[in-house]
Image 1 (cartoon, rainbow, N blue to C red):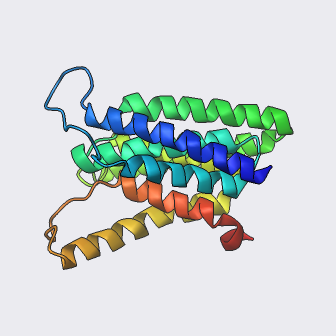
Image 2: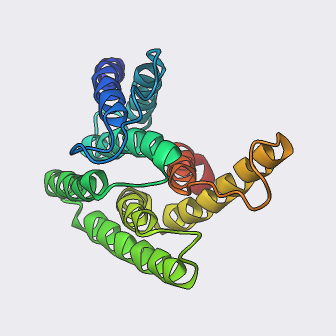
Length: 218
């Protein structure tokens, strides 16, 4: 059964990756501004998304919460490409992803009678939203409201796993950002004053914690 779920998730990831590629290439939507063209010319994004979906399915198996985590992965792929290109996490992606993920976790809670997990997810989303909002207000140049809303989205899925995952996931984003900055500075791709979008690092950090939460948290 697990193998079937993983294969189906991989095929779904191919489709989601293709859609994300087209959407990223057409951004900004609505005709305002200069479009960036196709996000990735070779089918790299599609293949990567398929791998991410397969790994997520391998991590959770045929569990009720799997669709919620896949929804975050799909949104995360699109957000990463847009943020890297435009330094922006659009509300038209983050807000629907928040609502869809919360709804899917609600269905998972109802199916498994896991209301305590849903409550913890919602609390974690609220906590991370508040923490990141405080940081954005204190340092608006380093963090934007898109990062704040993304923190709430990641809080939903990290909170489903546990408070330890919430803490590690939030911390991991800063570690990933620091490592990327050091590598790019060493490679002279950015200067000491260069700015990196924070969204991709948040997503990678959360993904690492979700993937290895069982080993890290027991």
